[in-house]
Image 1 (spheres, rainbow, N blue to C red):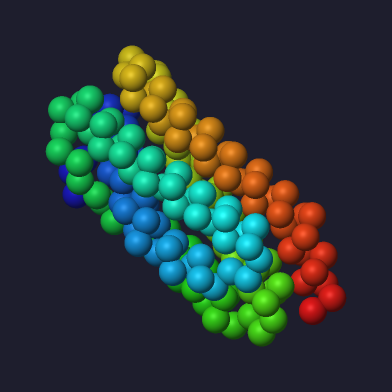
Image 2 (cartoon, helix red, strand yellow):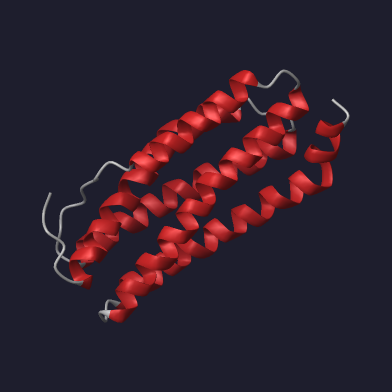
Length: 165
């Protein structure tokens, strides 16, 4: 692993991890759609896949903007969160509980992404990479929107239904 000597190096390291995270999630989330029981949740997860694909595209552009080839640095945290999501859906016995578990684990993933996009956007802005900062901020806003959608469906329908399961 290359030494991280300054904020520019840290930005590059974070971009690699975000790139890996999105790459991993683009592969892992589509099968999750089929585990969801609620039509609204399926729609939200499908929307989330679209966000992940757009964020992946944005990250490729960010690499180009700093003159690097897009490369992933495997994100172990995302891998663990994906495994947790898969385990939750496998172990839940009732459809509403599966949906509540899906939302919970997808929000854990989403919150990790929100934190990383926010931090990385701040790094980019600090070192004067405004185009990268803007792109990362757009990704951050998309992640926040998905989080609000998941919270809304959880609070309005899924969680109350899971109580009665």
